[in-house]
Length: 236
Image (tube, rainbow, N blue to C red):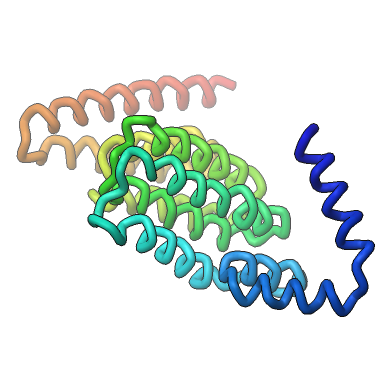
């Protein structure tokens, strides 16, 4: 496509320049752009065991500051650009970490973006938050698929401990779904059952009757469908 042609043209241009020109030019570009500098550093240091996630988190905080600088609110016209910048980090940096098997680094960065999403004062009439949350969800599923058992356990602990109000209501559904769908192994059966029971208890203690009833109904249904699934697994 168009992008591939452009990439090929740029590659030819770079190849036609002498090494010194490329080095000086790239040095200047990386001096100007923190995001590209971190990306380049990690490309060169492929052998590093762990990415420094705090560098990426600082980048995200800087992006956020940039968009909130005017009136502490991201308006409708800026929301798309803001979401695109976060998407770019997932698309390039998180994907790079995953390709290199740095699963927990990728997980930490995704989670930071996910928690941030619901807490940013933003006019999201365009629905960018939902789109980005879906992208994160897909990456989570992929991570769970490729994670080692001890990494997966850490991920389970993160998900189950983040239904405590640290994530905004409408994004909690994604965490609930991934707990139910992403941990199918036998070793999680008992944990999940205990977790569902604890969520039922929590719903019964809600101060708001409507919210409590809604959550109670939801977790009771999950409990029943989980029991059915368990019976089915036992019969197998």
